[in-house]
Image (cartoon, rainbow, N blue to C red):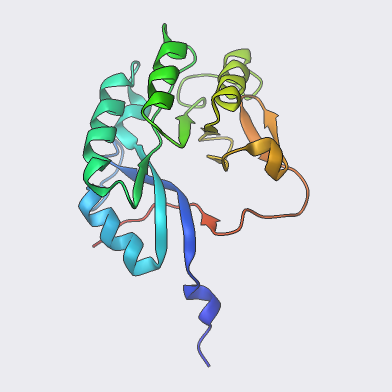
Amino acid sequence: MPDESRHAPVALDVNTFIGGYPFRHIPHPEPEILVRVLAREGVAQAWVGHLPSAFHRDPSAGNAELIAALAPHAAVLRPAPIVRPDWPGWRDALGALVQAGVPAIRAYPQLWGMAAGDTRLQELGAACARAGVAPGAHGAIRGPTPASPARRGWRPLGGACARTGSQRLRGARGGHRGGP
């Protein structure tokens, strides 16, 4: 008998990306392909990052590109843009992204030379919590986290969130989706 649990529907994928990666080829990093892959995999919605922006000093242009690219697919693909807490005006950038309705913010402290306990990451995590968006740090700490982290047993950890207790986020999974 086949293992049906392998194909169980997933409500949300919190670790998907569009755009190229500078160190290896990623096939089909376009939103149109991502929508088809998610449908094939039984995923209802994804919080999508813009992979090239993780390597930019100022991610604002990449964030604008991400939001524009995902707009035609808004029912399935939700933007999870980048905010660098070491960049001037990051609080204003976060405010504008919150106003645009993003569900989550991504950060890449390891790429930016920040340790997990960096106070700038803590400030970003606190600002995200006040704004009602999920903060996520990628690299040494996996994320992003579900919205309303405190209500779901998440606690701040260096500006990101870490799961406490034994419960898992139901209907969410991470991992890059690629291929047509």
